[in-house]
Image (cartoon, rainbow, N blue to C red; front, side, top):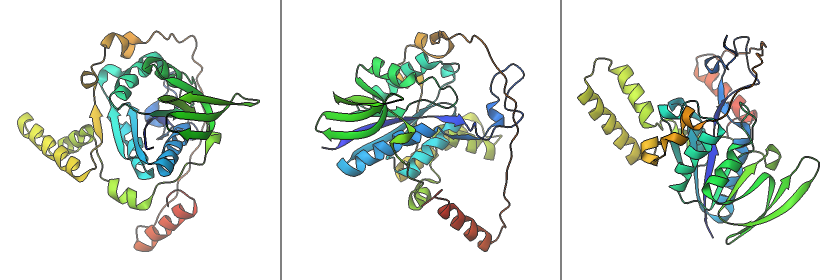
Length: 303
């Protein structure tokens, strides 16, 4: 039996490379000063979904919610083996806490009717581990959290080993199911070179709009919209369009989105000031590029 898997992924600040400008004066995280990466445990969730597809067939769809720049992690998901990528982006999503985020994501997931929904245990920029369980509740499906290993998957039955810190449990359930996955579950595969070549020019509509406006700053609105629609159609025909959904498309109830749908109150903020940096120059020659590619392969960054 083939399975329709949906993986929720998130672009997060790389907290291992923070600088002295990591915090804003008001105590919030200065995301512009931090490199953005694929949330680590979401990579484990993606790997588990790809492993299910390898063994049983089916489809893997990656979804992220965030700014248009979050399409970067979707491209990486495509590089690693995902079949489709969807960006949920809308200014009205801003300031969403875990409750609002899980509601918006549930609206997106419902459109795909998946057998298995997977996400990392938690994101490193929040460490709440709340979105997965809240999402399962809103979808009305069973959930297995802290999954270390998939033990059995047969027809609509699933069994998994879940960690609870100083031990583990074997949990059985029925599909559809949501799994939150921990880093011990697997070793995520690296980007695949031929998929990187295929999807290197993949873009969302927001990416297209940004590129065309940058290249044609004085273009009038009608010409701009025509150019955007033409490029989006071209990308879709090539199979490299990252789908883009907004709250109107999701038919989301706005009272549950953004700041209005977020009851979380911040009790205290602690500023963190650290310093770290590192860089390597690559010679701009064919040999320099060749050496760099070999280093990336040896470092298991690409395959």
